[in-house]
Image 1: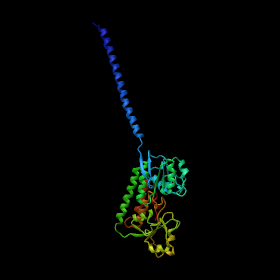
Image 2: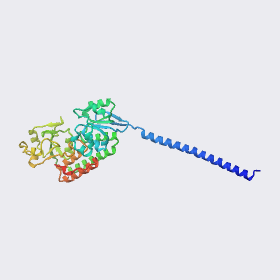
Image 3: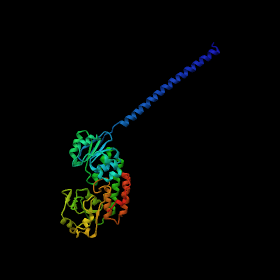
Image 4: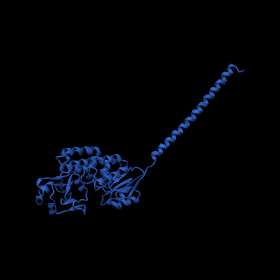
Length: 358
């Protein structure tokens, strides 16, 4: 028979062995749990790093494949450069078109653009300079087809765009926002366009449309044909473009006689014109035109952007024109307030509405 002292020793030994085995079991379980956690973490990391291809068909009909969101972007077109700001991508832009210091919107919304390398213009594109910036994405107008093809041969993703009417502008927004993962902002822009266009259409209704003539910036007798973005602006604003019968060119040059025959109710001067409203009002050759008789000659403001071109803010040009044509239904002060709200929402800047002249 065991003594009491021996019995206690055996019990103590068994307790020690039991505790030891328990610790081994816990250690084994912890190793198993850590392994599961490590596997889960590894799986999550793999999912984050997993690349989902994005395919885009641009306005040249090319399929462009992105394996990751571009971090370095070059825009060789002021229209898409402005779009990149509206999409919140200004910090990703590493190169832009020449003449950035002449774009007020850059100074206001993305002043860093002024010091960026430029890649030339549509007439003289700097292919080597663009490639040297090592971009993940280049956005160019379709007229730079040769540059698009050459950049593509270098393995650089290029989106070629042609935003010559509202539908094509929306497609441009879709392409760029999808490629850059900014679809939400792109959808907000398009939704704004749709709501404002619907408002203008409802406002005009079946009322008689005023006849509008728009003079170009380099020559008053240069005017947008049916094929130009400006034609769609006039129509969307509730007017009738008197030169919409011209469809065999883009900017057409007409004669005084043609303009007298058109006899517009309203004359619009596009931004940055080399002539003034007073030049038109005081031109003796035009004094018989209805618009001249009534003093209905207006200059589209250019303090921020040229709204007669298909920049993202061009909807403001249409709204401005709608207020000119239908001020009894759409007061000019209301337009100015809405323009301020637009730039605050999409460009995150405060504009001085007193610069919205007519």
